[in-house]
Image (cartoon, helix red, strand yellow):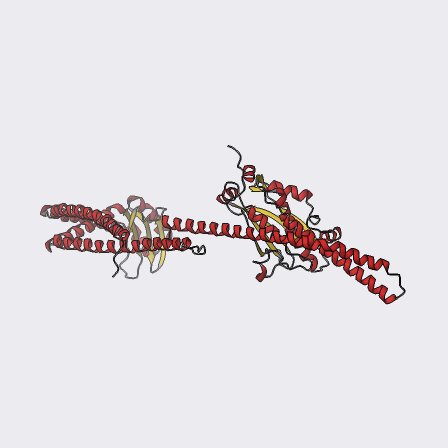
Length: 538
């Protein structure tokens, strides 16, 4: 058997004392009360007086009932009533009952019946109140015949008298039971019961303490093990969050800390990879851009100087020139995108109202023309016709630290991707793109861009933000990579989800001003950016 830890031993002792000390006090008080009660109830004169009082109550109840029966006999003995009953003359019976009724104050009703049929009846006008009255029905013959008319008198008496009688009888029975128990040495029996209760309480307290200590020490051990794993570099470990105490709060805070550390490390790693990709894009753009002009000029020169009459060769030259110029144009566009990606600046964050900024974007945003992204005017026209854009922006201000120009590029890139995906479906009707903003809790805002396009396949949702990964026919895979880089520099998170509109949702979460996440991202910025994003003085 394992030796309990110091925490378990201390908790067991605390629970044991907390259970036993009040129990000792309760036993002492109960024992004193029982001793006093026993000495009081053992008086013989008390028992005799109680029995005498009960006899008086019983005689009073019997006298009340006998008085009602005598009244019923007196009413049934009236000659006029008996004569009317013998003739079964209903008017006479009702008159007799009405005359005799006021003479008896306890009457509730008088009726004359033959068999189950009531011939005449007179009552006080209100039924028996069972809460305050008790009823006594009395039946008397009005003729000498067994099947003749009968008088049914219903009397009422105050209920309190009989309730007092029952209460007195119950008290006397309790007293007699105590007397019988006292003769069987109940004091000793109660002493044994108290001792057994004390032992059982001590055992239960120790068992409860060990159970509580086991739960506490187990969770503390889990925290210690998780801390060691984190120290070894494993940020994926998590502590189970169960219970509703301070240790549960500690476990929840520990998991939240690990999640933030993991996000920060992922953000740093992604930004480092982006820096490498940007350098590679810069070199690639430089290496591709230089030979493009000589190639195009050389082919154009060959096409221009051919003066022969060979028609087939002329067609070959025309086709070659067309292909070279088209491919050179494609390469120039690709080089332009690589150059824009390589020159992507770092976000300069400042405190601002995200709701108000989005309302400004709604009024004058240029969605599909961007020289840095090399989107040509013809392509822009096609994209404009491909989608209808709607906005869902709350009226209340939602403050966040953000770079207006960089976040503008995020919104444009995501909307352009959605429009291109919808365009590639070649639908006859335009698609729909919706931009919405809301506060999802006290620390985070969500900027969501939904569309009703084909969506993003599940296997690609993790890699779609990597450079050069694309699902479009003419895409370079840089748009969403730029989006993720900018969002991470804002301290946010971007993910792809299924849209309620049937297509894809790009959900961008940004920290509110004053949240721990916003403070953390401000601390990671260069000093110049940090000064711009400092919270306003209060």
